[in-house]
Image 1 (cartoon, rainbow, N blue to C red):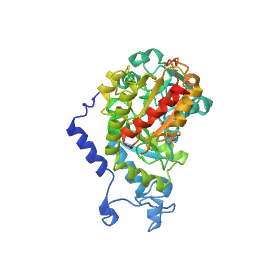
Image 2: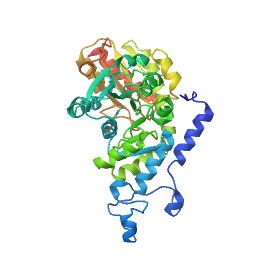
Image 3: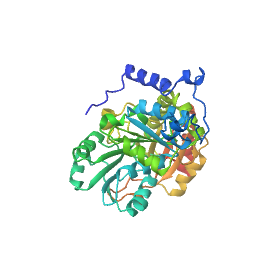
Image 4: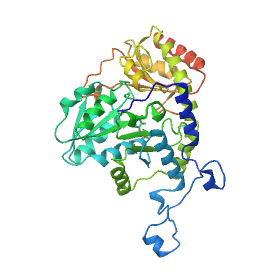
Length: 395
Ligand SMILES: *Cc1c(COP(=O)(O)O)cnc(C)c1O
């Protein structure tokens, strides 16, 4: 299994060029730089033979337009995939990916730290359709072999977990799954293909909530499923069969966001680390859960496999009543209180994983908040957090 080299300058340059070039075809757009928004359902055929033989490059709006094709091609290029299919949200990409590989009677292994709505889908619809869902410790590594059964069809990973930031040993888990013929699915939203090329580590289906960094401006939802050649036909068939497609404007916004992805991510990483280091030095803070900090328990794994970190991480505060934590959050002026992340703006939410863990126990030692460090000046963000922490102390 080929491992990606650490992010050398040359490598980073290559990716920066790739996000600018991928999926573009000005010669097909009268020379205009960007593929425009194609709105359309009906595609006309010149003759009956063309219509019956589905000879056109495009056959129907739901099946793809030049706008959605440009985006799918760009993502395939960045992920190194055989194909990418687009759906209307990140959650839809997760549920569709699972439905494309799991059938009634199959056993599915899901990381205990997955995004909440992923877990909800597994516990309701997927289980309701007759799949046997089991959760595993995200830090299990190669020992996941012990959990395999003859009917284990899929393993779902999310690394790092998007609330608690455990980093999984993706190649070790993937190797076990590949040897047993199970599909490896990964929610790769945190790293994006710029910081983690999932297929290089044995992942068959790499999933992105494009809603986050790809769009980057908190103004659209979209999901992508990128696959190896082996899984491309069945994923394409499932998406076609379910009739899923993103809106044309949302696809356009993703293409637009993509062009600045590498500069935005570099800044999110730099500012995020600056804020994380500062928080680590504060007396109110017990721990900072950021994989790129040397204090993170799986820092070595992160360093081995990832070429960067985004602006999303969590903070464990020293024990305080929730009312004081809420006063801290309410006092923040530059951090908006809201779900989602990956936009240009900073965000904060309180969270508690206790009720959504079954294979592991969540006992961080104090109240937890998740931060998204946006593109504001990090010194301003630190000043804002400082006045917020004063409120925490006096509340
Ligand atoms: C937000 C998110 C999703 C879902 O994306 P939506 O577009 O909101 O459906 C999936 N996975 C992770 C890790 C996310 O943070």
